[in-house]
Image 1: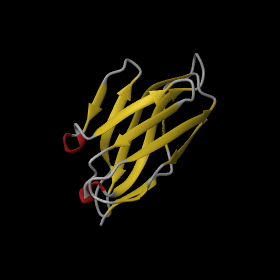
Image 2: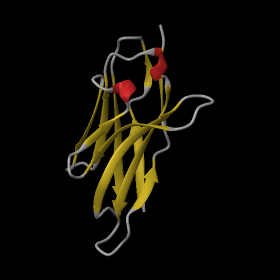
Image 3: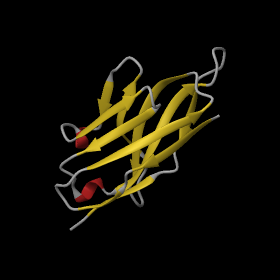
Image 4: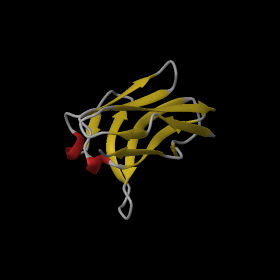
Length: 121
């Protein structure tokens, strides 16, 4: 099993910055993909940013040039640096990881518990 613990959410004024962290622990053999999703009240959960083990990144159009996803392999941690935040970025942000727990295991997806980001003056 893989456990994900997110941190870094909070209240920030428009134009401000936050950095979210997601630390993975447990029986991790490899992590093929790490991503951030977000869900605003009454809306579906949408992809914000994705980072594959190859280094390829994908961003939602609404966050391009403002958000940056990165990882620290030594800490099994993925980050989301969010700059120039807007009220429409307000949502619960979820970490998602696809990982193997052993050399012969399949690839499974795991979700974090979510962290609230509120952008408001």
